Image (cartoon, rainbow, N blue to C red; front, side):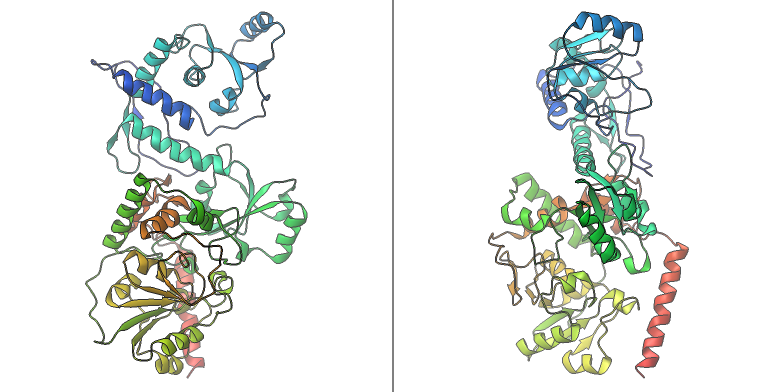
Length: 536
């Protein structure tokens, strides 16, 4: 068997621990078809994957240069004489890993050692390639040589899906690499991150990684300004720090927990396995557009994407996934023969309420409005888990709750409750979105991200910007596939949504029995006991 260094490799995301992604094969007895080889070459060039595509991107000339990537100084000198008046850019520093696709992007020609995979990269995009010395890529200057290199270093490799451990094809390996490349490239302009608690950084860091290094977690004093992008967890940053960044001309990029987050509460310091990075605003702030709103208003949804969204929605419902929990429980019996409505409470000082409620911030007021609109209904009220855990504000005194709701359910699965009722009424709660996933009628009293697209009954001030009408699977594609980022708790790799859903269904997203989590849960129990004593 001939040893082969694979061209397609997994990026070294910080903290990742993937299964062995690929292993050398031997040249196949039956060579791949011409169409397959052409498809792979086209994918390499289109997606710009292969080699260390996560590497740094040094400043290069605008166009027309000759890229010289040769280790030998004597050879470089000889090449320089041959080039005469042509502009040459020399690249060879063993200590610096560069993105080869960036290096060749505007080149007119590439001169490279015959054992450097940069030769395949350059030939894939149609550049003239001159190989120096002996090596496995010495013949890529010709089309037949390029096809041979792709056959040997891409198509004859045995690839393993890092998330499932199953075999995957070269095309599937390229698609996964393209998925990682898009996330890495989206992070390249980010130079710092503020307001991200230390206990979150282990899982957030890989999702913000841009190859050469994770964005600096630190104080605003380390940010210079001049158009830099800085990720902020706004609710955890002081107004003074934010104002300082704005004065410096920094572009602020908001980060928040994703819609499918973990098993366990963020208030208990269970780290998130999903985040949202939004450069326009943030999904719950209805006063301004967000990246999610733009996707829903003007984005296009291919048939393949819609099929993926439909399958993802079915998987979420089948496995009983919600933002903080997973697991299928026996169907809950109906409480009454009357029309039943589930009303979900929220954290009253949360930004999703303050900025999305558009004036409605009280759980008690929400409950009153639902009762006014449905005086004969059987109303079930479920407080927010962070409020019940004793960490956040929004509790309704028992006597007032009993006057408005027929039942208050403090424990249990939100997905099980949704299944047991006829309708769900919310201010801006994510429970409304989870109810839509389960095809339940939803009424909104604030302006959540899923309102205004023709899928809900809306009594709140939904922005007039939302003019498109979307199907449920288009909403799912936007909110759960295109908008968030996910981390696989098993491998530490950024992953598609389906991977995290399956991990959560298997109970692998709880963050473990960390002392900080235990301490926060104990603190919450003490707060609840003190509150009960204070209320008599």
